[in-house]
Length: 271
Length: 316
Image (cartoon, each protein chain N blue to C red):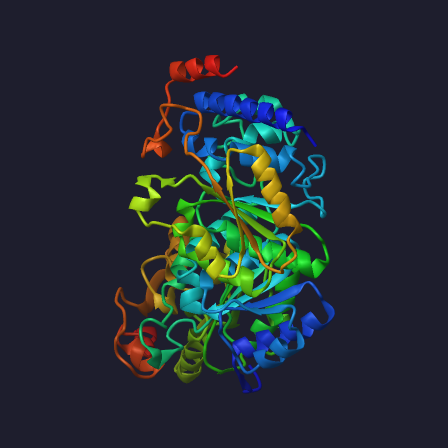
């Protein structure tokens, strides 16, 4: 497990690599992929997820479904760094001989499911969590979802299912960046008070600053340890487009593409 | 053609799944709050592997996918119109798309095909499913005509990994097939009656109609052929075409929409691809929903394919 200093450096590196990926493939959803970087870093480098890049089907791995597929580009450098696939693949993103699309699919080593269509991940994770219990495998199923994604009705079918079946090996992380494609959630469907909604469905809930590595790690460890027999949710409060001034606080940053020279300037500033 | 024992397909399927679950611990049965008399003992005896997800077809598919990704064989059971149409995008993403790279053995059991829920009205009629489910790659489409072939499909469904859709009639129907030797799930069709120059190609319930009509007309100087299509995808096209090319006239009958991708389109596309000079007549539901109530023959008559209508077409 890495120190907090190392984890912070990792997050900076992932940010730079994500910006480069956006330069190679301008169709990538950059803003959405910047809000979840620290979450990915803590999961993969912070001793939370158990995985084996040499054996991606390892039965004893924790399952991780990145339900907000658009925001998963920042996971590519991490998977390459951990040798799920070669780092040389990164520069090929979106090209005809690459398996890295701007939205990930099951061709990419390390991805469990197809993730481009929103609202499926939690239900699929419920099936996996149930299967792990029946197989006697003491591992967790993690899901990363966007807050906008929670507008999908199928998510709430799964929320009801998870608590009724006491799936305490299921951990949902909501990347609560408070925006979806057309603007702020509070002006679209208003998901707040989000934590209370999950509480009402009898989930164990936690909240954290989704860019604070120490806090994320502490809270995720608390959730893993919780033995109250409930599914668990972490509402991670994040900022869409985090760290890029042209994206942060722009209500339509989801679809915003940066020019190559803009990216070069940002990269110069965050070495 | 054989004993006239009448049974609902869903019951023969569920009974067979039940007997498999006794020995095979890797089978789940999941229902979206749909029951059946045969399901009661399964629910009771396999409490850990029977799940009622509630009236939630989308989650039915998603939970089934998760279980299948972990290696379980899953039967997902709901009313045909809802499992296919309420959850279509879940089926597309998690079964059709995902099974391109992953092994996902989810078997969708849709009960109440065509207008077998005759008096329940248009919400419960399922006449779009042949068109829309055939559009999805990687999904095998099973459309049985009797409970016996449906029962035998269970063994095949466990051993042949991958998503499948089972389009089951909602009403008890007589047995058609004598023995398991008369069908082959890789072939997908059976020429139940060899005819002279006219052949009816049908699927599901309509095969019973076709057989009845062929029997009635038998002896009037001609013999009408009957082909039962029990697998609508994938189609063993060479074998099917070799059987069909002997006929001058083919009449397709289905309790589904015609002229937009159903059984009729499957046959007509094949004939045109092979430049065959076979005359084709398609019978099935017009491009309308049915807001009238009555038995199935009456509902068919609204689109001109009642038994009487079919006989006229065949004799023409």
